[in-house]
Each structure stands twice: as structure tokens, then as C-alpha cells.
Length: 119
Image (cartoon, rainbow, N blue to C red; front, side, top):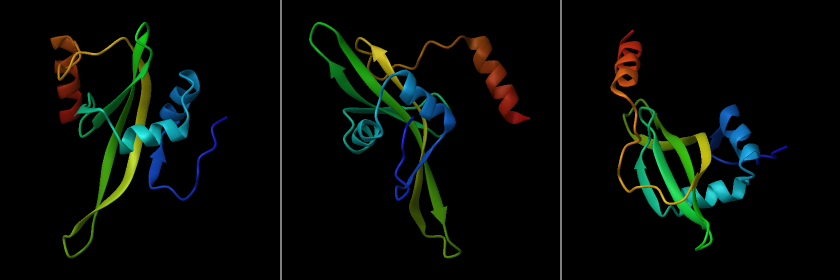
């Protein structure tokens, strides 16, 4: 069971909490990755960001990734202030991931996603 502090500006999805249990990650480790990422990239989902920190050893390196979405709160004066951060997913990537390359997603899947997004 994962215990979450109530005073944070973080919103945790049920998917992200399941992934914390699956990959044996702690809430404090995810917060550390958000505060001090080694690398940031555009997330696979729309309007998301993925950040990473390396972990493991020289013989068995891996990376811990966190995908999140920054919610922006706007007032009637049109001043945008940073809002809550929605943690969407977290995972361990075995090995070292390629830098700034999108994941290999087939063209058919992209067509289905864009068609679904328009409706």
C-alpha cells in the first residue's frame, strides 16, 4: 500500500499508484525525479512531459521514468499560475534509452489515435 501525503500539489492517478507497486518505487523517488530530472522529453500522450533519472549499476543500468501533465490554473485576470501536477505513469526502463527519439509506434496506430481524438 502506498501512503500519499495530503499537502502536496501532486495528483496521483490509479494507474500511477499501481505502477509504483509494480516497479517497487517510492513516492519520494518520484518526487526527486520530478525536481531533479536528468533528462526531459515530450510524453507519448498529448500535453505530457516525461522525465528520467538513471539508476542501477554499471553492469545493470536502468532508468526510472515519470510521465506527468502540468495543470495550469487561470483566473479571470488571465494570469496563469502553476497548478497541480498530474502523475500519469511511472516505469523502469531496462538499459539506457535512446535520446530524443520517439517510441516506435506504427502508422496505423497513429491514424486511429488522431481519428479518435477528432471525434
